[in-house]
Image (cartoon, rainbow over all chains, first blue to last red; front, side, top):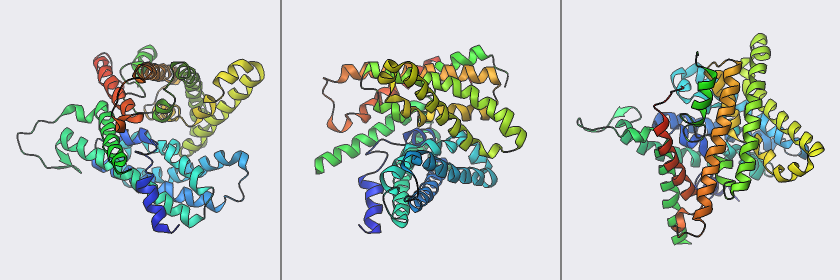
Amino acid sequence: MNKKDIFIISAFRENSVWKQILGICSALAVTNLMLNSLIMGLGVIFSLALSNFTISLIRNHTPRSVRMMVQTLIIASYVIIVDIFLKANLPEISKQLGPYVGLIITNCILMGRAEAFASQNKPLDAFVDGIGAGVGYTLVLLAIAFVRELFGFGSLFGYRVVWAGWTNWSIMVMAPSAFFLLAMLIWIINSKYYKAG
Amino acid sequence: MDINAFVLFWAAIFTSNILLTNFLGMCSYLSVSREVESSFGLGVAVMFVLTVTAGLNWLVYHYVLVPFGIVYLQYIVFIIVIAAFVQLIELIIERYVPALYYTLGIFLPLITVNCAIFGVSLFMIIRDYNFLQSIAFGAGSGIGWLLAILMLAGIRARLKEKLIPVGLRGAGISLIITGIMALAFIGFSGIVQIQ
């Protein structure tokens, strides 16, 4: 399998969010603004790719019995880097994301990719797989955030795009809309998938 | 933050339900909610672990991490505390209550990766709760999570025989039900607000 196939499979065909329903806690929580979703997505891509790479590097030296603990600690180290970076450079966004940056550690996508791919494949392949899964996750976040920010605040990335008389749909920035929109996204993709297959 | 611990307890169950408003613990919520009984088992286990680890992490944070100035290590330390506590509980139950171990056994490892538990510890630090408030917040969030998964399991049990569009089966319909539940819980939000 070449690098391009690995990327396509982990980003689209086996997308963690819509295919395996993993890591949706943060996918739902930060999607009321496009910018927050993008930052969150970049944080996940960074920690996913590098933790996959590291876990794969030491895969032959990790005893099976403690591998979960080792994987968690490696993931946690990269997430701490992301957290410190955000606190130092983007304090406003770091505050809005709140605990959800730290929660990347318990994001099932990272653990899932570490177990399913990185612990059995070469470091560079694992790195590409991590980027692929992270990009797939980010795309879902941005798709949901697009609808929620557009209808909820009348803006995209903070820029107002609607006409003057627009009334914001306050339900779009609240929790239920996130559940409904993700459900609809899964519905649309699954229907397409079943029709094709 | 000066909010009564008792008020916080009720707020964590209803107005800021950890799952319905903060989206935490979704993975096991969606995957273990097919049967009411297993949902109840997992929910009780989550509630117990959540309450105790909130207290433990509070103590560790304020008596170890802050005095030594290593607050930036909180993620790693919290995760280790949670994993170690779950492991300990597993050993104790296996040794003394083997019957419970076999009914609960498969859910225990799942708890370590339940983000609701880690999330409550992080919220409690960010919102600067004191010890009593943290315990109340942990217990309330646990009960709130148990309530949410029980409701979903009850509804899903009735949906088994129903005709649902193919693309919506499984996770899709569960998310829509959760959305409706979240919508209903917004009705509580006038009572008290915790941020």
